[in-house]
Length: 211
Image (cartoon, rainbow, N blue to C red; front, side, top):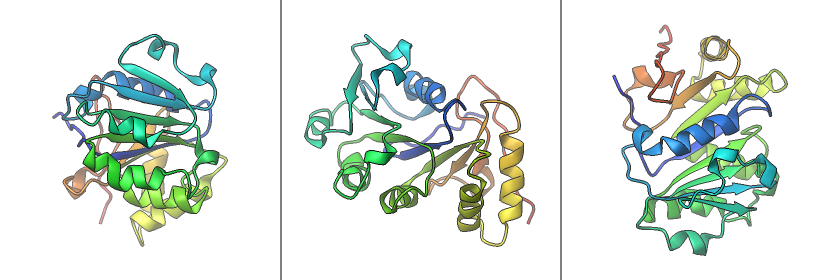
């Protein structure tokens, strides 16, 4: 069974450095028209340092590399190309004046885009928390230094079942560079919301919490 994701979505990829966030984001970008029901012709990759950009994405005409946060006026010019927008490790620059909430809540839908944020935590600021509330997909990598955030998220997503959520998270992230995919999209059946893979070339396991 192929579980394709819905376009016009916000994705949060969350975890510490060195766990595989950028590698997974690169794979999603390269396979986006298979992972999503989409025909995306261009991807914007916004970075803090150029060295952090995966080498395979450099010097490719359909991958537009930009330093800093998105220029919303520039993005509007690509509304007919189903642009994917990746915002890599710019968490400290995302504030109420950055335009990111408007990008997610308004422009992504009007201009047929999917937005992916690479973050260290989803409880860094009020704006980041608001982005979490609008996210269709959250990808959680193992984070031994921020277990409280995972517990807090579990309490919000599965009230009264936080221990069950943490058990699923521990299982999904038991191997290096693995992650838990939380599917919050309105069209996703409840029994498929917790999975361990987003890439079409790998087997996807579904975690069904005991009631």
